[in-house]
Image (cartoon, rainbow over all chains, first blue to last red; front, side, top):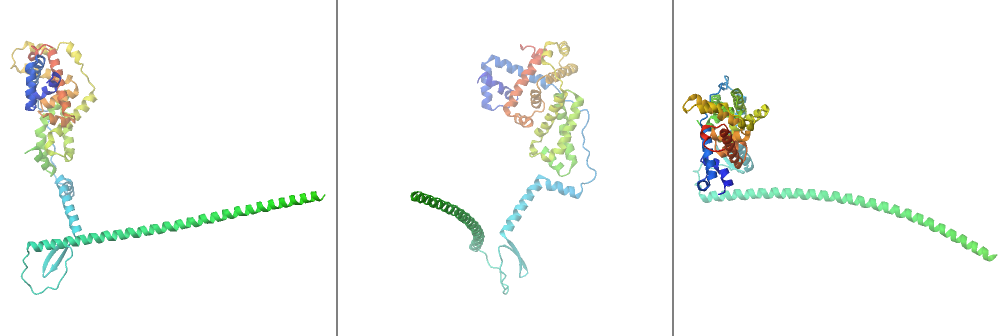
Length: 227
Length: 192
């Protein structure tokens, strides 16, 4: 250990907050380095002097006046609701309610008895009272499988419905797009047609003018020859 | 009851629990502030403010087992603000050059058990503490007198662990230099 490294370890050594291995290294260095040993002794002396500084009593006592009247029920409720424990319980309760809502519980009265289950319960005509059937682990497993497959069916229905809706929306969008495209195409055709017509008209006009000029030239040339 | 139990009782509406917490920590907090700011009246006022802030903010304390570092953090912030507002500086070099009249009285009194000598020695240490840089002082006091662990000091001051160790080292060095310059008996045989 170097002298520079020992500096940061001296407070830990002084107050016993060094790990055993670091303490051993520090003590070894102190045994070998007179300058660091001197500093260490000086620090111990300073610590000893400082530790003799006693504590004083405060000039005044601080006392918080206890509330004479009980909190209003509303305030108590608010304090309880906003306390960390209550918030955790509230969150847990909310999660349980959400889970129950998703699992679609149902409550029904059958044969004078309340029954609670997840999923639909089919009401069947109650036969003469029979002793309750023995439920085996196999029955439970079968029931669980049933519930699982019903849930899967439900999920598939939801997915199908959502994909059908998506397809419908997509079709509508495509149709609207095709309609707009057709409108645009018609517009372009109209413009092109009118453009071509006006070009045609001006070309015809030019051609006719050219013809006239040529005819005049020919007439003039024939007249000159005749002379 | 532990700090955590008292806090929970208070949050449920038991005001006596908070007063128990105050009684437990008032004297240490007051003495911490006294060493930090050097004035008994100021330390008294600041201590009251510490507990008022504690009362209003206790609901926000996330880890109730770490009440002490949190409380000292409030005290450290108040002491820092107060010290900066005062803007009083004591020149270290000035004190080193001049002879300290208190040290003369100490040297003339050979009986270490004498109460007056003890009080004078205490006064020297208090003055010396006020002369070292503020950050070194707050760290040294929290370790020396409030007996917080290095990790708790780091938490209270919001500083890394190595910074705490460094401040302790340099704080002790500064105290050594001041006390030696005042020819304090215990450090007299060490050369400056």
